[in-house]
Length: 135
Image 1: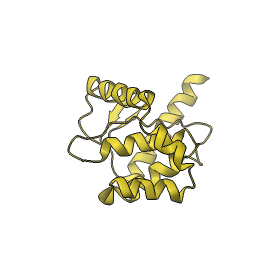
Image 2: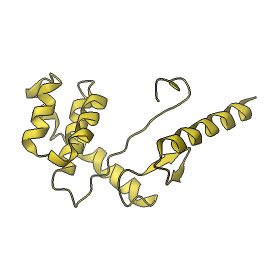
Image 3: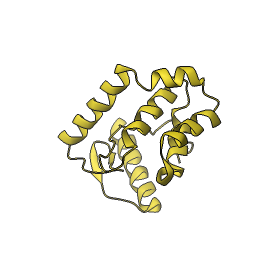
Image 4: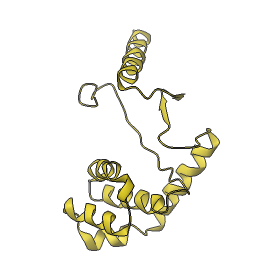
């Protein structure tokens, strides 16, 4: 989808690790550490595909499979800046009513859409609305 709307769509992911998942925070730290090596999206996608098997070993396996510099990755995963980003995202999420993941906002409004066809229809509607208001 993002290729279709590459010039019109901006996707922002905020970290909101659930306390009910033992490795959620570690996974969030790992995705931000992967971002420092330009591999956020690849790491994130692989995490989602393996969300039921996430543990320390799986996180390291994913990093290795993406050919990350493992010394840098292991250092970056514990950087204070990464912890600050996650804490900020959690606080922001709580302030705007996020209670679980995924929580999706389109143009600042929370949507409960989960059906991909409805989701695409909503995005197309918002793009058309923005295009009309730009004229």
